[in-house]
Picture (cartoon, rainbow, N blue to C red):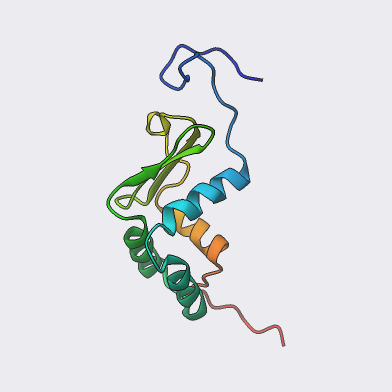
Length: 128
């Protein structure tokens, strides 16, 4: 159920959209990080070799690019910016009026989860 709000987070009718689901956040993340040709293949290569947080942040900045976005009727509005590894998303137009759904270390953590990229600096003792 939506609530009325006259502030900057309201849509054109003054209604707040409900929080994004986990699936919508992952969808927005994937769209923001695979926009360039060959992106899926590069993520597979990165997952195979592993990356430190610093190298992963550099890769994310490359894949996200300077600034971009996408949206339209009945679509999730997505905007992204390589600087700060920021990703915004909302149902409808105006996602930049809200705080990013992911930024900085949270974007790096999402990349590890979504693309299965291990950190070679994280040493775990063998269980056998």
